[in-house]
Length: 129
Image (tube, rainbow, N blue to C red; front, side):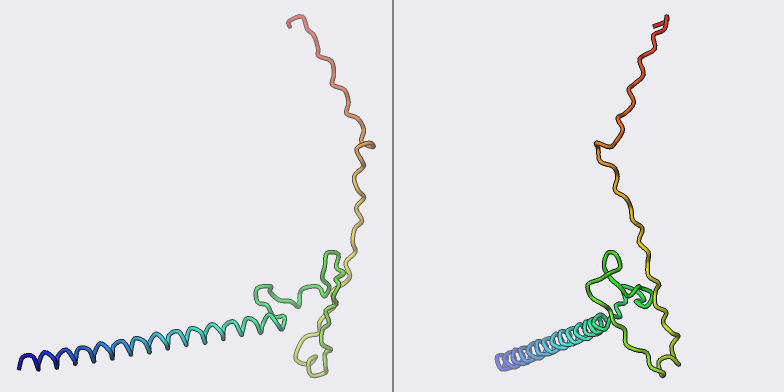
């Protein structure tokens, strides 16, 4: 009878191990699925904000000038949607930025135009030297 009891205990132990492995596999699968869903949702929100021009890292885009590029003249023009009567009642009117005047800086003179340095004064000879 000992062998029958041993075989029963062994079967029960194998069944418990199999059930434990299945539960662990299901738990791992759920964790991976939830992680992927959270990752996709988070990046979807970030991508949506950046695609609409509401990048939170760059700050408030309404305070920036409408032109881009080095001297304020960009290759692309940024168009803003026209304000309707309903929009103006809820939001304050947007003020267009004033044009910026650029200062013209003259280049430094070439080396030929630079005055030669003054010659060094002759050493002074005294009686004590």
